[in-house]
Length: 307
Image (tube, one colour):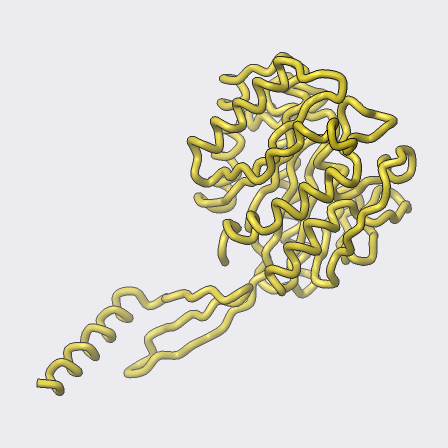
C-alpha cells in the first residue's frame, strides 16, 4: 500500500512538472526556476534588479534632486544616508549614479538626495541592489490641460510618453551597467497640487488617473503597483480644490487594489513646520520628505511587483 501511494505521488509530481515546467519561487531579488529535465528536476537561480519610478510634480522632484531646496531654500539636510546598493537614473543627463554618492542633480551641481530616507529604509528591507528613476516635472497636472504640463496619456505633448521613454532608458542603462534583468517594480505617485489649484475636479481626476494607470500597466505589467502620496494643503488654508483631490485619491485607492495609499500625513505638514519657509504654501521641507520616504518604504517593499 505504501509503495502504491509513493508511486501515485511520483506520478503526480512528474505530471505537474510536465504541465507547468516553470515554477518560480521568489527569494529577494533571486528567482529559482525549476524545470523538468528527464527524470529529474534542474534548478537555476536568476538574479533580478527592481526599479522604482517616481511620477509627479515639484514635491516629487524634491525627493530625488533637491537642487532648489538646498541651494536656494533653507530646506535643511536629510538625516538619512542612502545605502551603497541604491542607484538613480538621471533622465536629464542620461546618467547612472550611486545615490549614496549624492550625484542626483541637474547640470554639475551634486547635492545629496532628500529621498535618502526612502533609499535607506527600502535598501535595508530588500538587502539587494535596486534602482530609482525620477520622471517628475514641477508644476505638472494630471488632467488634460491642467498645469504647465500634464500626465494625461492622450495628450500628444504630455508627460506620459516622456515618462515611458525615461523608464525604458533607465532599464536599458541599468542592464548595460551590469545590473541583471532590471524590471519596473512599482510607481511612487506624489501629485495633485496642480489639479487642486485648478478647482479639484474629482471625477476628472479619477478618470485621468485610470487612464494613466491603465497605460502604465499595459506597457509594463498588468499588476504593476502604484503607491499614492496623498496631496497636502496650503500653509495658509485648505481650499476646496485640495480637499477634493484628497477625496479623489482616497476613492481611487479604495476602488483599485493595485493602487495603495502609502502616505496620508502631508495635510499636517503646515502644523508640523515641515513646509519650505521661502515657499510656504506649496513645497515640502526635508523633514516632510524624509517622513514620506521612511513611511512608504515598507509599503513599497511589501507590495512591489515581484520578479
